[in-house]
Length: 89
Image (cartoon, rainbow, N blue to C red; front, side, top):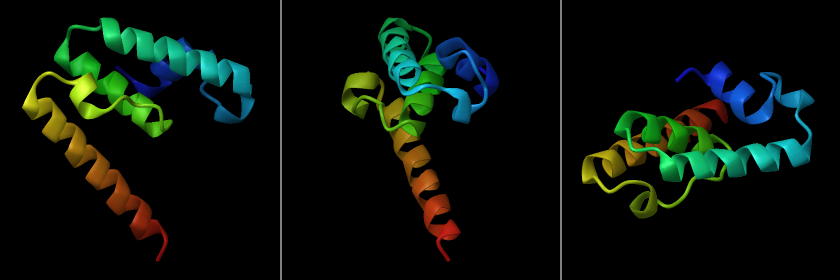
């Protein structure tokens, strides 16, 4: 899954400045539904990560049955948090 493809699929644009608030909300909801239906672990992780970027990811215990997937998600969150604090310096 490519980020640009996900943006077009859920928001009909790769330019976040062009996306209306209603379109953003509808796209996030559509992505959450797709996450709930997706059975492939890799695709589920990609969709969860995408939702996490928008502050709309479900809790890890809801999103992932596998502890390895939950740990990978925790690692991603830690990396993103570290990169945000690096940018504040």
